[in-house]
Image 1 (tube, helix red, strand yellow):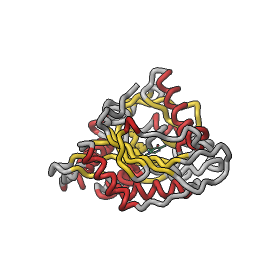
Image 2 (tube, protein in one colour):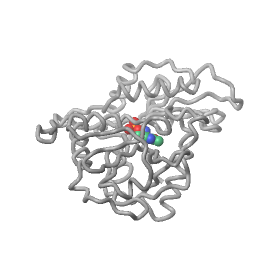
Image 3 (spheres, helix red, strand yellow):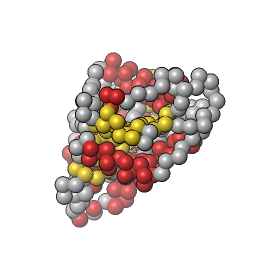
Length: 299
Ligand code: PMP
């Protein structure tokens, strides 16, 4: 199993920086027993001028607050305060390119009642792209995304990720790199931990909000596509559309932008290098490290 800290690593735990090795939580927490917690996945990057910058920290910490309040967890932190704490945590742990994981969790409570308090831990570690850097061999999952009538899917709640884990494990057990989940109507939804875009005749398509976690990277890709004059549409599509697509990619904070080699062993029509999607991938890589995106890439 991976090792996320060493003897010197610090975490931020309920108002204090403490050694990760000494951090404790209550094993009677409602979060551990029922998956009732919310979290974020944020990245920082060493930028071209040598400084470390958290990418879209306001968006991430605002979503953490939204996630908590959406599922009735008390939340008393301020976004700007948490950004400052995270900057300090990165500096203390001498991290540049890092993955940052805040978790808001519940106190001891074996009932299903609302709590009067919540707790917060912020952890950070170095992490390479979540799905690797090679084009992905993706498999359509037998697991659907959860019914949005059963969960607040727009909240990044821990319990939702049992669905993600099942789907991803199934894909890997069948020799693939990652799963693709459909929604309960049979439309394409998303990856276990990332959003999807497909490309056809120079145009990008991504599923609309509703059955997905509409990611911050997805929003960034939409912004980049518009700035680069690549047409893009939020609309439903099905697996057959991906079999016939020119390119496809997953995007998320942890995964960044990563192309498909195939879906269910159907190759994409274009070589990744020849796609508009590849241009988006390159622009994203530059954006996160504050490297200017050249004018010809913007056309
Ligand atoms: N969908 C799911 C289910 C996810 O877990 C993630 C990762 N947070 C995403 C999409 C992408 O979201 P973001 O770009 O905000 O990281």
